[in-house]
Length: 124
Image (cartoon, rainbow, N blue to C red; front, side, top):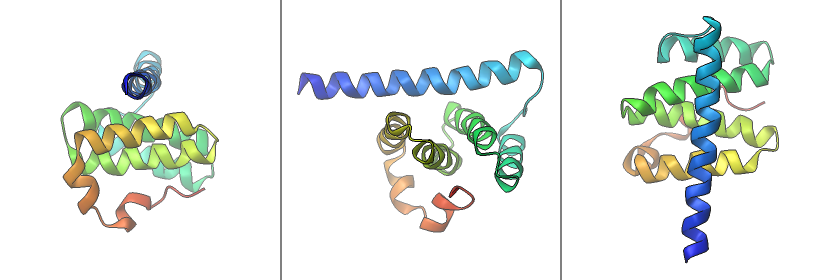
């Protein structure tokens, strides 16, 4: 039991670190979205260009912005996009941390979201 809890805390720490680094880089460079909508727009554009690493970074910024204000619907959409792309890049630990966070923080929202909204624009 103790190792399961320690594993979850490690996953949350990994998630926080990864999302935080993406936001810090965007803010320090002065280049990046100022809000959730701009981040999602940039992510969708990067995704359309097949620039999946950039799309993942922009989705991560959108996820952080939505999550920081407790907007479950937006956090689930953006977080799921980050997790899907993390899986596509082979980063299963990152995806697991995001999914665990979403399920723990927004359980009702996750269960009520239509599948098309959770996966739209996120498949490589």
